[in-house]
Length: 384
Image 1: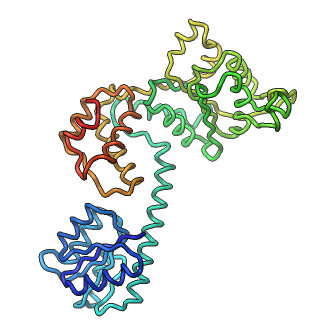
Image 2 (image 1 turned 30 degrees about the horizontal axis):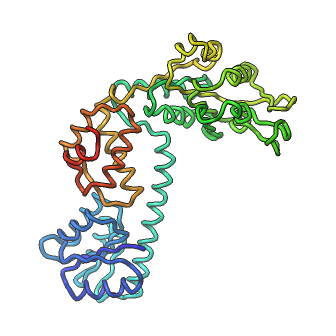
Image 3 (image 1 turned 135 degrees about the vertical axis):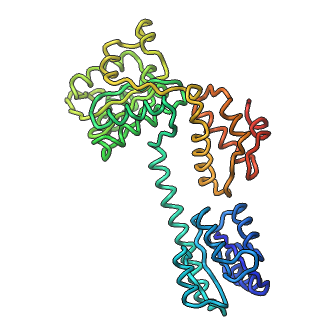
């Protein structure tokens, strides 16, 4: 249900608009002057604003200009003292429309519906863009993270295999997605396999597929991830947890660029760029006979190490603001800020869970805090 804010110094106009719009199933708040209206705008999420032009203290044009700075909510200007010049000025400054008093109620309702439909489409488009861009966006300007970004920029256009290392929660998947998004394979599929989440007895079927009847539950033919990723990128996450038999088959596939489905004899060519990631020290795994050294060298043509958050603390304000914006948008809550004292605590904390832990903390604060996240909130809702 759309929410409308009416700003007008005439009580009779406010009451009339409120009654009409509520009859049309809108939720309506009203304010008697511009400063009060802007305060309500900070506290609530609106789909359209109806604003008078001639008001004491702050006129409607000033309100419009302030709204334009803070949000994309459409503003419909209304006035009983307007001229063509006034209407032109309002539209030029970004007003969605201008309606003269006495109000034509049919035109008013059509305009309000069009404005709320428009903001709905804008927000839906923004949501989709955030999902697409957010998936490959790496936030940070520290030396450590700039080094990672520069490495990605150089490596992405090639077909070189990449091994991404780093602690859990540092953003290894984001690096893999960015490598894909900036590659010549970007229009192809990006297939992700969590090697730690698939039982050893099923990993070969997952990666290479199987023929119908090749084992008890194989009731139909299955194309594996190597086939599905052909023409694109296959991301083998947690490669250090892959079983030795599966490692052997992956090695052969990387050498020959072809696979055999489980239970099959037909040779199937594949055109796949493989990117792998792990939070384990693979050299130690090799010494312990848990990982094949030849596979390590096949995968690690390019090595990218993603630094832990504790080594890039200067990025925390950027990350915190990024996550705050994301969660406010997804929850529909009004704008929130993090006061400097609270940000100082976030920057001084130790982050064993890295960027993922920071994201969880910001989401928790968005849910539990008021419009300003204070120092006391960080102390109350985190383990600091």
